[in-house]
Length: 275
Image (tube, rainbow, N blue to C red; front, side, top):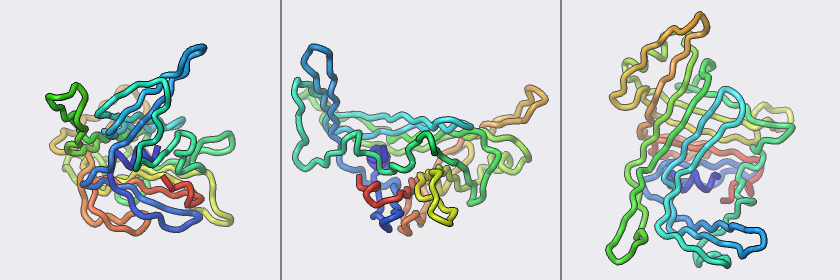
């Protein structure tokens, strides 16, 4: 899945350290080379069918963060050409093979019967403890490039990247609501730590973090929602946001980039970040 994050954003830093090791993905101006995707469909008593997709681009993703339970996500992938065959195509020249079984760059972050995630949210570098749920949506506004000589696409090209989302908060005071009304810019960070820590330490060996260095509540020109009181219980409010491009953003590896999003990664071994 981290491979898909990279292809959605376009930039990645070198790996720092070896055990644990860190790396950062970030939104870059140049998009990465397209993906080659092959999927086998096996039918009982019949010949398998292989569908291949050439020149594929990751147009975006949508991540839902509940109050508790499983964080879920979907990917939007567009391909220029689709083919089908009864035999595997094989890896095209110049292509790096990543199988579903090996594409687990943060192996230690996988849920198990003995572990899970510890998630938290920060606003302007301070823990924000009254967020109940959240959502992150990224789209590259990809477009199909067609030509007269073929019924297949010539290429898939990115448009302008947009990152939006929302958080549901328990309204304890008017601090963040006032920032929403005033269109103040903030930084927003969603981080998911593995329940694994080094001996005698409190820093997790593995985590994945979505960091937005410049966020505007309500987006650009959005209107603040009006809090409503439906019952005597807690007062909740859903605040939409839009991520904007910021300059001189420092990643977990110490690199400084201009970007609207950074995905910071930390893994127990350098091999978990080779993707």
